[in-house]
Structures are given as structure tokens and as C-alpha cells.
Length: 244
Length: 356
Image 1 (cartoon, rainbow over the protein chains, first blue to last red):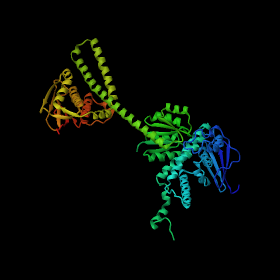
Image 2: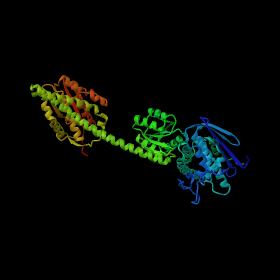
Image 3: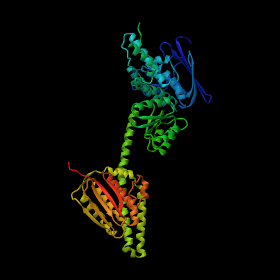
Image 4: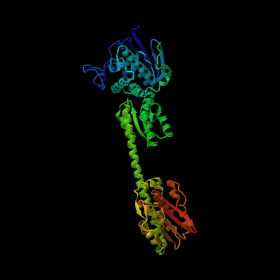
């Protein structure tokens, strides 16, 4: 593996001895999915099939990029039950993550990567988070990563002379749009599955996205105490940064 | 707090999201990871609504729904599922679920549905309450009239009918036995709290006390006559006006008169007197009641707990006085039973109407 690529390996070990592996190769610069072979395109991957309400793609697009990215994965778990126990191992260049969990939980992390790296204009906004992927993240961790990503983006906007959105207003809008995509995708996947593992994995992603606007609305008060030292600096110097 | 909701789902992220959103909308929430834990939580405290996932380990949502419908019929259930399967939806609705939501759930829509469900529950409860009060009034009315009929039958048996042949006495005894059974059932059916509330909702008007008292005496006259009891009515100040529901107050006085009549001994006289005091006082006094009659009346002297079963343990006289007491109390008045020198007095106080 060269430095131009980011590789993630997801391994699912089941109690019955079964095992499923998934390798994801990403372009290190764009975080786009690098394809080794052409992906299957079943009927449910067509753009018009349960097309998301907020889909910005032109009618000339025949297939939904998110659905196409997910097709193989959905096929692999179409007969699986959401609460089936599994041991999930995620290997990156830097470290290995492991968790004994339910299939829906492990699958949601993997589906999240496929969705964000698919070239869907709505999901593209979350690409930086894939680079700092945290498997099995809690809701709170995901909120923190999302806010960090967004504020970093505002920093770059500011440096380029733009007007940064320090109030996180647009982050809530981004996640509302992502929620609509998650809902659309769950309808597609529901029709492509016989059991509930795939759909419930998307439901988990949707839940996190659904709660984020309200967490922001409430001023992130859950994590605010962690920043008490910064608040002290503000009181002492009238600014959070001491300038020489 | 707009409602108490139990969220049942094996997925912690989903539970947390729904909990956060519902809490921000003012709902009180608790969570359970499966059907078994949900039933444990329901055992501990009541919930207005249960949001119940279908596919869960240990006990699935459909099994839990059956248990909840049986054990907690007052709790509404909304089913949640990741899989849009209409046959499952119909099965759940047949088993008593109120609604069915397919995941991923739009929490704004969920809140709208919950509010609508809770509004419907409130309306249903109000309707049931009105029905209960109406039924209580009906049962109450039937009960005290049957008590009078029962005593009339007893009076007939002890009078001219005492000389009747065996064949003639047979039907009379059958009627008395039937009445006793009906009275017993009615006493078991009456719900005193509903009765109290029903009387509380009656409209208050200005009541001419002399008219009300003479109407009450006239209404029970056949029963007094049958029992051989004479009445002596004295109005000290004509034109006294009270505040209350005229029908309810008159029935209260009628009940008290019948209660005293039931306790009458040979040659008893009931004196009815309006004293002219403020608040208005109507004294209904019986001298020389029978010993059993006196005991029966005095059962109503102390406070009686507000429980349906108490009606079963009370004498007919005491029941009538309890009902009379409720009727008066709902209009700010009171009924007290006292005894002195062998006589028993029922003091009915009414709120005086004052012209503005």
C-alpha cells in the first residue's frame, strides 16, 4: 500500500464460525473509493428508484452513486438479523480496532464509509471524517468529530478570505440533508434485503445525524465542561489566546 | 411534562436519539433494551405510551405487545420496525398497537404522532369519566328508589297482606327476594368517587327552601303513609333562599326523610323544621325510633370512607344519608346525624343565597 491510498479492512467473525471480510481502498487526497473492479448495479441502485427528496443529481445520472457503492455489501448481509452477535475487527495502517457487538452496529460503520466516499454531493460534505474514521464511535464522539471537522473547514474558509460559520448553523443543515439521504437509502435497502441487518445499520447512522442538529441547538452543553480551561483564559485575558 | 414514554429498542444509539428529542419536547422518558426489560419497567411505574421495536433479542416486540395489551391496557403502544412489512403491521394493530412507524424515524413526526395520541387518550378519558358519572347518577337514583320500594313491600307484608293466603304471600316473598338481590348488586356497582364528581358538576341555582322542603315531603308521602309515620313541617321564615341544584337538594331531603322513616317505631312522628338561621338549617327529627332503626341511622353519623365496598356494609338508612350528605356537600352544605334523649336528628345545612 502506498501513501496515496488509505486502506481499511473490516472483518466480521460470527458465533457460528462464519467470517466476512471487506477491504476498502480510498484515495488519500480525495477520500474517494478506489475501485478494483466494476460494481454490480441491481435495479434498486437506479437513481429514480426511491430517489432521495433532496437529490441534487441531474436526470442524466442513471444510477445512485451511494446505492452502487453499497450493492455488494447489502447483498452480503441481505439475510442477516440486526442483533446477531459478531466480533468486528477494523484494521488501518496505524492501528487495529476490535469490538464484540451486534451486526447492525458493525455494519453501520462500514456502510457509513461506503456512503460518504460514493461521490454523492450531499454525503461529500462528510468526507474529511472518513480520513479520521473512528469505528464503533458513540453518538457523543461522532458529534465531537463532526463539529471538529466543520470548524476546521471554517478555519480554511476564513484563511481564504471567506466568512466562516462559527455558529455551526450550516452544520445542522448539512446533517438534516444527510438524514434525508439516509431515509431514502433505507427504503432502497429495505427492498433489497430479506432481513433487517442492512436497514437497521442505516437507521443507526440516521439516528446520529437526526440528533446532531438538536445537540447543536442546545449549545453542545454536554461537552462544554470539557473546555473549562479555555473559559478561564477568556475570563483572565478577555480572549482565549494570549498574544505576545 | 406532556407524557411519559418508554422507549424499547436493542440499539443504544436509537434509544438515545429518541430520548434526547422527546426530552427536548417535554416528554418524560425511560428506556429498555428488550421486551423483558420493558415489562419490568412497566411493572414499576405506569407509562402513557410505549415505543416498541419489533426485532429484539430475548423477547421480541410482538410478544411484548401481547403482554402489554393484557397487563397494561391503559398504556398505548406504537410499534417501530426497520423493515416495512405490512402483514406484521396488521398483526400488531390487531394485537392492540395504536400505530406503526417504519425506521428510520423522523423524530419531528414521532413527536406529532405522540402528541396526537396523548390528546386522543385525554379525550377518551374525559368521555369515560362523563359516562362513569352518568352511570353513577343512574345507579344512585335507582338504588334509593328501590330501597323505598323494598320497604313498601315489607310494609304490605306486615299490613293487610299479613292476612293473605299462602298462595298470595308467595309472589310477595319472591318480589322481596328479587329486590334484595337487585339492591345488593347495585350497591356493589356504585362508584362513590364518580357519584361525588357527578353531583359536583350539577348546575347551582337559587332554591326556594320552603318549596323544596314541601316538595320533598310530598314526594315521599306515600311511603310515610304506608309506614304509618306522620310528619310535622314548620317553616320559620318564609322566603329563605339557598344556593344549590334544586333537584339534587330535594332528593337529599327526600333521602333523609326516607332514612328516618325506615328507623321509625310505632307512632313515630318526623318533625321537619326550617330554623331561619344563616346558613339555612333544616332539621329532620324523629322521636322514639326503633332500637335497630336508631343503630342503622347512627351508622351514618361518622365519616364513611370513599370506597365502593363500604356501601355493602351500611344499612339502608345509612346509605340514604350518605348519598344525601354528598348531594348537600357538593353545593357547600352539610348533613349531620346526631342523637339526644332517644331522638335522632338529621341537620341539613344549605348555603344562603344573598342578593347582589
